[in-house]
Image (cartoon, helix red, strand yellow):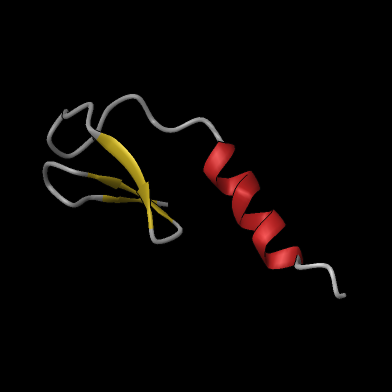
Length: 47
C-alpha cells in the first residue's frame, strides 16, 4: 500500500495556527474549508 503524502501534508496545514481575526471585516469566525483558511462572515481567503 502506497503512503499518501498529500493527505499527510493537508493534515499539517489544518493543524497550523489560524489567524485570530479577518483583516477585511474584523470577524473572528475563521474556518478551514476545502484546503483553505476562510472568513465565514465575508468570505476572505487567507494566503
